[in-house]
Image 1: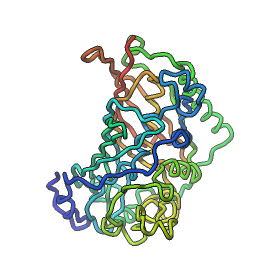
Image 2: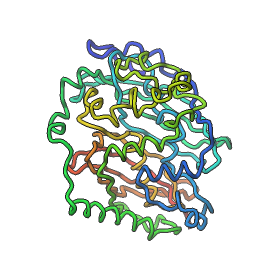
Image 3: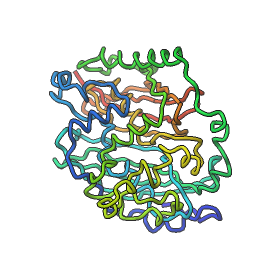
Image 4: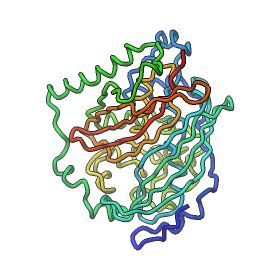
Length: 396
């Protein structure tokens, strides 16, 4: 728990009483389907046939399509962010600041249902160039499958700030004035060339094992590129989260209304209000109303300090997980990842992903692990996200 005192511009005095107090669980009504998984990898721009091509998957070690580890966050009803935004901060808004993941033995597959147990973890207040006094709040979500397996623990970071401060500081004013970057035919062809390198790495490894003896510190992963992003691509991401489908939630994301958390009138909305959903579901849909509306509606993005439509933090985290998982192959498994989100992916931007192996090691009982540092930058070399991933490699 933080002992930070409330400031004149950011009153966090309500937060302390929530720390360590379990919340209402989150749960979707239906089990995971093959269609859910296919929709997810399509939205995350992840061309790994293990997760969408039934013939390819039938020849894999699993014998069928399974979910990528990044899909775990899609089985929650709040991107894992519900326990990181408890408590009232008046006149505030929220963006994602990062996620830390611990993955356990379970793997998600079609037919699984998942129950998400949540608890607020801690918070602190720091000054930022974006919004002055800013609250970095963390919360934990544990994902349990209907088979009783622990899938993962996610520690999500929410960045909560006062809207007025962000608008006054105008951190993205230059990018707003410049507008969306223009991409020539030649530029787009270069992006396709980078994407082709990533696809080739997936296809060349195929169903084979990436063994520890074939990996060493300094190895570079094939680069990848996503984008250029658009309102259409961000909408595709949003709709890949089953929670965004009308009537899909059995429990969650929370019983607390947006205004009780301190969202401004324009952004409080009714996301997760299942009583209203029965009569006017559009008003509960974050694509149109509520805290999420700035992602897909540029006029509302500017109201919370963003220059135009912007992507989802949870999706950016998924890009990192998919990127390393593709390199490791189907016999490998990510065990831990910590990713910080530094700059939003805006409409018109592209995202360039690179990775480097920083170390390899053999742990107890012949557990082989590679550590990989990952960086995502945009076309101007601004860091969108960076982090480290540990992936367990197979033995002979």
